[in-house]
Length: 140
Image (cartoon, rainbow, N blue to C red):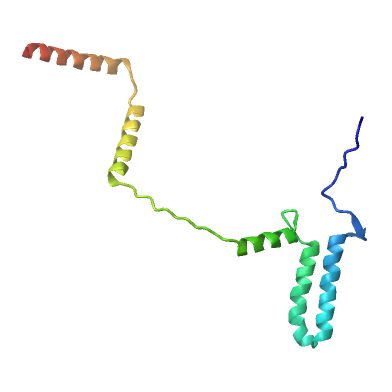
């Protein structure tokens, strides 16, 4: 038996013209609040409250950050601002001997990589080992 799987679940329906219900609610709520403040106060005092409210209402309706609605950005900002934060800083003690040993080891590794094994190099090593054997045999 086949079932129809719903698609486009993350897209909200446009109910009021080009606006979704949520966008329409932000616009009507912000506009209504601005109207109430305008009627309750004189225009010169009310303008300082009306502009931020209208800006917030417009941002909630139209502005998207990284293709996410502005309300999710506000929610994340409030969670960050009012949640507990734990800052941990550990100072590491680096011993001078270990630091010097690391430098010496790196230099030795570079020298080993730099020296190439050639036939003449092998002959020189064999000759020096033969001389050491002769010197030991002569002492005995």
